[in-house]
Length: 113
Length: 114
View (cartoon, helix red, strand yellow):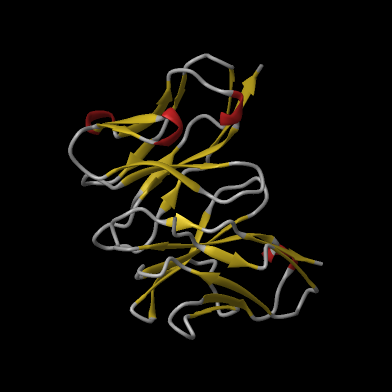
Protein backbone atom coordinates (compact mmCIF):
# COMPACT_ATOMS: atom_id res chain seq x y z
CA UNK A 1 0.00 0.00 0.00
CA UNK A 2 1.39 3.41 -0.94
CA UNK A 3 2.52 5.54 1.95
CA UNK A 4 4.09 8.87 2.76
CA UNK A 5 7.65 8.49 3.97
CA UNK A 6 9.47 10.98 6.17
CA UNK A 7 13.13 11.17 7.09
CA UNK A 8 14.70 11.40 9.54
CA UNK A 9 12.37 10.07 12.21
CA UNK A 10 14.12 12.13 14.84
CA UNK A 11 16.49 15.08 14.53
CA UNK A 12 18.26 17.01 17.22
CA UNK A 13 19.71 20.36 16.28
CA UNK A 14 21.25 23.33 17.99
CA UNK A 15 19.37 26.59 18.16
CA UNK A 16 20.19 28.77 15.18
CA UNK A 17 21.05 25.87 12.90
CA UNK A 18 19.27 25.09 9.67
CA UNK A 19 17.34 21.87 9.32
CA UNK A 20 15.77 20.17 6.35
CA UNK A 21 12.97 17.72 6.87
CA UNK A 22 12.35 15.36 4.00
CA UNK A 23 9.22 13.70 2.72
CA UNK A 24 8.40 11.39 -0.14
CA UNK A 25 4.68 11.78 -0.87
CA UNK A 26 2.57 9.12 -2.53
CA UNK A 27 3.72 9.01 -6.12
CA UNK A 28 0.63 10.11 -8.04
CA UNK A 29 -0.49 12.72 -5.54
CA UNK A 30 -0.62 16.37 -6.47
CA UNK A 31 -1.22 18.22 -3.22
CA UNK A 32 1.34 18.34 -0.44
CA UNK A 33 1.20 19.61 3.10
CA UNK A 34 3.29 20.19 6.19
CA UNK A 35 1.77 20.18 9.66
CA UNK A 36 3.33 20.33 13.07
CA UNK A 37 2.30 19.10 16.47
CA UNK A 38 3.92 20.46 19.58
CA UNK A 39 3.98 17.77 22.24
CA UNK A 40 0.51 17.13 23.56
CA UNK A 41 -1.08 19.84 21.48
CA UNK A 42 -3.18 20.09 18.37
CA UNK A 43 -2.15 19.39 14.81
CA UNK A 44 -1.37 22.76 13.23
CA UNK A 45 -1.31 23.57 9.54
CA UNK A 46 1.89 25.08 8.21
CA UNK A 47 1.73 25.10 4.42
CA UNK A 48 0.18 23.51 1.37
CA UNK A 49 1.86 23.13 -2.00
CA UNK A 50 0.38 22.50 -5.41
CA UNK A 51 1.59 22.90 -8.95
CA UNK A 52 5.08 23.79 -7.73
CA UNK A 53 4.01 26.68 -5.60
CA UNK A 54 2.66 27.43 -2.18
CA UNK A 55 -1.13 27.44 -2.29
CA UNK A 56 -1.71 28.44 1.32
CA UNK A 57 0.34 29.07 4.42
CA UNK A 58 -0.37 29.80 8.04
CA UNK A 59 0.91 32.55 10.29
CA UNK A 60 3.38 30.06 11.72
CA UNK A 61 5.02 29.70 8.31
CA UNK A 62 7.13 32.83 8.45
CA UNK A 63 10.31 33.76 6.59
CA UNK A 64 12.28 31.16 8.52
CA UNK A 65 10.38 28.40 6.76
CA UNK A 66 10.51 27.31 3.14
CA UNK A 67 9.32 24.35 1.13
CA UNK A 68 10.60 22.82 -2.04
CA UNK A 69 9.90 19.96 -4.37
CA UNK A 70 13.33 19.69 -5.89
CA UNK A 71 13.06 16.60 -8.04
CA UNK A 72 9.44 15.67 -8.55
CA UNK A 73 9.43 13.09 -5.79
CA UNK A 74 10.79 14.67 -2.61
CA UNK A 75 9.04 17.44 -0.71
CA UNK A 76 11.15 19.26 1.83
CA UNK A 77 10.59 21.68 4.67
CA UNK A 78 13.51 23.88 5.59
CA UNK A 79 13.77 25.86 8.79
CA UNK A 80 16.53 28.38 8.29
CA UNK A 81 17.45 29.27 11.85
CA UNK A 82 15.80 27.03 14.38
CA UNK A 83 14.41 28.28 17.65
CA UNK A 84 13.61 26.34 20.79
CA UNK A 85 9.91 26.74 20.08
CA UNK A 86 10.32 24.94 16.76
CA UNK A 87 10.65 21.71 18.71
CA UNK A 88 7.71 19.61 17.59
CA UNK A 89 6.64 16.65 15.52
CA UNK A 90 6.42 17.62 11.88
CA UNK A 91 4.08 15.73 9.61
CA UNK A 92 4.08 15.64 5.87
CA UNK A 93 0.90 14.72 4.02
CA UNK A 94 -0.27 14.32 0.45
CA UNK A 95 -3.56 13.97 -1.34
CA UNK A 96 -4.47 12.98 -4.86
CA UNK A 97 -7.03 15.71 -5.30
CA UNK A 98 -7.88 18.79 -3.33
CA UNK A 99 -11.04 17.39 -1.78
CA UNK A 100 -9.99 13.87 -0.93
CA UNK A 101 -8.36 12.42 2.12
CA UNK A 102 -4.82 13.34 3.03
CA UNK A 103 -2.36 10.62 3.89
CA UNK A 104 0.16 11.42 6.58
CA UNK A 105 3.68 10.26 7.16
CA UNK A 106 4.95 8.98 10.49
CA UNK A 107 6.47 12.33 11.30
CA UNK A 108 9.87 13.77 12.13
CA UNK A 109 10.43 14.67 15.74
CA UNK A 110 12.54 17.82 15.79
CA UNK A 111 14.27 18.73 19.01
CA UNK A 112 16.01 22.09 19.19
CA UNK A 113 18.49 22.42 22.03
CA UNK B 1 -13.92 30.50 8.51
CA UNK B 2 -13.97 26.78 9.03
CA UNK B 3 -13.43 25.36 12.48
CA UNK B 4 -13.65 22.03 14.25
CA UNK B 5 -14.54 21.48 17.87
CA UNK B 6 -13.96 18.34 19.85
CA UNK B 7 -15.51 19.10 23.23
CA UNK B 8 -14.06 16.11 25.07
CA UNK B 9 -10.34 16.30 25.78
CA UNK B 10 -10.21 12.95 27.55
CA UNK B 11 -12.59 10.00 27.56
CA UNK B 12 -12.22 6.80 29.55
CA UNK B 13 -14.23 3.70 28.78
CA UNK B 14 -14.07 0.09 29.84
CA UNK B 15 -13.07 -2.53 27.35
CA UNK B 16 -16.15 -3.87 25.63
CA UNK B 17 -18.17 -0.72 26.25
CA UNK B 18 -19.52 1.45 23.48
CA UNK B 19 -17.84 4.66 22.47
CA UNK B 20 -18.92 7.95 21.02
CA UNK B 21 -16.50 10.79 20.33
CA UNK B 22 -18.03 14.13 19.51
CA UNK B 23 -17.09 16.47 16.71
CA UNK B 24 -18.76 19.70 15.64
CA UNK B 25 -17.75 21.76 12.66
CA UNK B 26 -18.41 25.24 11.46
CA UNK B 27 -18.79 25.76 7.73
CA UNK B 28 -21.50 27.20 5.55
CA UNK B 29 -21.76 24.36 3.09
CA UNK B 30 -21.33 20.61 3.53
CA UNK B 31 -17.71 20.03 4.37
CA UNK B 32 -15.51 17.08 3.67
CA UNK B 33 -15.09 15.39 7.06
CA UNK B 34 -12.52 12.98 8.39
CA UNK B 35 -11.55 11.12 11.51
CA UNK B 36 -7.91 10.26 12.12
CA UNK B 37 -6.34 8.24 14.90
CA UNK B 38 -2.89 8.76 16.36
CA UNK B 39 -1.21 6.18 18.55
CA UNK B 40 1.56 7.47 20.84
CA UNK B 41 4.56 8.64 18.86
CA UNK B 42 2.94 7.70 15.59
CA UNK B 43 1.51 9.47 12.59
CA UNK B 44 -2.11 10.11 11.72
CA UNK B 45 -4.04 7.20 10.31
CA UNK B 46 -7.29 7.79 8.47
CA UNK B 47 -10.23 6.01 10.08
CA UNK B 48 -13.03 7.18 7.82
CA UNK B 49 -14.27 10.01 5.67
CA UNK B 50 -17.48 11.67 4.57
CA UNK B 51 -17.87 13.48 1.31
CA UNK B 52 -21.54 13.09 0.39
CA UNK B 53 -24.33 10.54 0.17
CA UNK B 54 -25.13 8.15 2.98
CA UNK B 55 -24.70 10.02 6.25
CA UNK B 56 -23.54 6.93 8.12
CA UNK B 57 -20.06 5.98 7.03
CA UNK B 58 -18.06 2.93 7.94
CA UNK B 59 -14.36 2.96 8.55
CA UNK B 60 -11.53 0.72 9.55
CA UNK B 61 -11.17 -1.06 12.89
CA UNK B 62 -14.93 -1.26 13.37
CA UNK B 63 -15.50 2.50 13.61
CA UNK B 64 -18.39 4.39 12.09
CA UNK B 65 -19.43 8.02 12.03
CA UNK B 66 -22.66 9.81 11.35
CA UNK B 67 -22.95 13.15 9.62
CA UNK B 68 -25.79 15.27 10.96
CA UNK B 69 -26.18 18.50 9.04
CA UNK B 70 -28.81 19.89 11.42
CA UNK B 71 -26.39 19.57 14.33
CA UNK B 72 -23.19 20.33 12.39
CA UNK B 73 -21.81 17.15 13.86
CA UNK B 74 -19.78 14.17 12.75
CA UNK B 75 -19.55 11.91 15.79
CA UNK B 76 -17.39 8.81 15.80
CA UNK B 77 -18.76 5.60 17.28
CA UNK B 78 -17.70 2.07 18.03
CA UNK B 79 -20.04 -0.52 19.56
CA UNK B 80 -17.39 -2.37 21.56
CA UNK B 81 -14.03 -0.85 22.40
CA UNK B 82 -10.84 -2.91 22.49
CA UNK B 83 -7.80 -2.07 24.59
CA UNK B 84 -5.87 -1.42 21.38
CA UNK B 85 -8.20 1.48 20.57
CA UNK B 86 -6.50 3.61 23.21
CA UNK B 87 -5.11 6.54 21.24
CA UNK B 88 -5.83 10.14 20.33
CA UNK B 89 -8.61 10.80 17.85
CA UNK B 90 -8.78 13.83 15.63
CA UNK B 91 -11.73 15.12 13.66
CA UNK B 92 -10.87 17.23 10.62
CA UNK B 93 -12.52 19.18 7.85
CA UNK B 94 -11.02 19.18 4.40
CA UNK B 95 -10.18 21.94 1.95
CA UNK B 96 -13.02 24.02 0.56
CA UNK B 97 -13.31 26.05 -2.61
CA UNK B 98 -11.31 28.81 -1.02
CA UNK B 99 -8.76 26.92 1.06
CA UNK B 100 -6.01 24.38 0.67
CA UNK B 101 -5.77 22.96 4.17
CA UNK B 102 -7.24 20.39 6.48
CA UNK B 103 -8.31 21.83 9.81
CA UNK B 104 -8.05 19.59 12.84
CA UNK B 105 -9.87 19.62 16.13
CA UNK B 106 -7.89 19.60 19.33
CA UNK B 107 -8.24 15.86 19.67
CA UNK B 108 -9.81 13.47 22.17
CA UNK B 109 -7.53 11.15 24.09
CA UNK B 110 -9.18 7.78 24.66
CA UNK B 111 -8.19 5.61 27.59
CA UNK B 112 -9.48 2.04 27.77
CA UNK B 113 -9.78 0.26 31.09
CA UNK B 114 -9.25 -3.49 31.16
